[in-house]
Image 1 (tube, protein in one colour):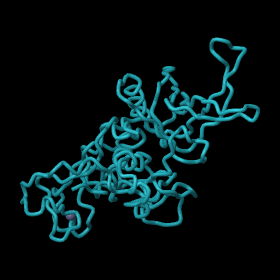
Image 2 (tube, protein in one colour):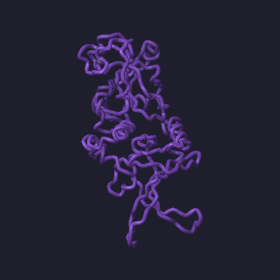
Image 3 (cartoon, protein in one colour):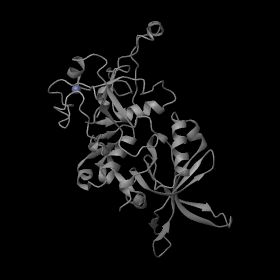
Image 4 (tube, rainbow, N blue to C red):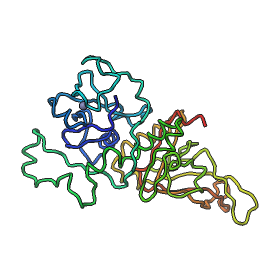
Length: 329
Ligand SMILES: [Zn+2]
């Protein structure tokens, strides 16, 4: 059984595994999923057992994962009868029933919207920090409406502010084209099925403002900044030319962008791993659309050549990863 969300005791909120990963890597937030307590998201089920009845996580802290992250039952986890989170597969197996791992390779919970504002969390005062918390003003209620941050209720289960979640849906269900055509995704004002919201980088001229993706040809490591070159080329005809010509596509990540990123360490780990990797890697990004630019030629600085390029503006909407299913196309 995979859980779309789990209840996190200290944050008093239901989190997706992608929220948990985001919190783990966020250097501005003290959070370590290995030390947090997660329980069944069904309120009635949770109320029936004590705090020791917990769920565990899979791929919560691994920067470079291939298999879909999720919450899962521990061998001792109990659910009340009728809890929708009781897996039909494990029912009747008893407390020591071992879960089949075969259903772990797909993300089944498609968020209908990627929220561009990050989710906010308010930590519930714990026994350990009671003294410290007592001196603080009461934190605003998470469920209060009318402020800029969206409430926990709005963000689970079918909305997310973590880019990795819709990307995992797309990647792990890539062979199920019908499903990707059926499931809708909204970002900002734009809604489209997953299958068309994710656009191959070579077709970026078709439509602006989508999630572009493609196989990486090379990552140029300038130590403090990086350039991602895509394998595919964009075929484009200049007004004064007769035929379409192929142009390279790349995206650039500046030092300033990386230095100011709240998940800087995890990002550098991800990209350095990618630079050294011999495996096929893919890049996904949202928020910018590469445009044709003239850049000076290295061999001949007097000359320029055209390249489709964009500066990434928000690393929250940028991912480099392995995606084995995407190779056969
Ligand atoms: Zn339950």
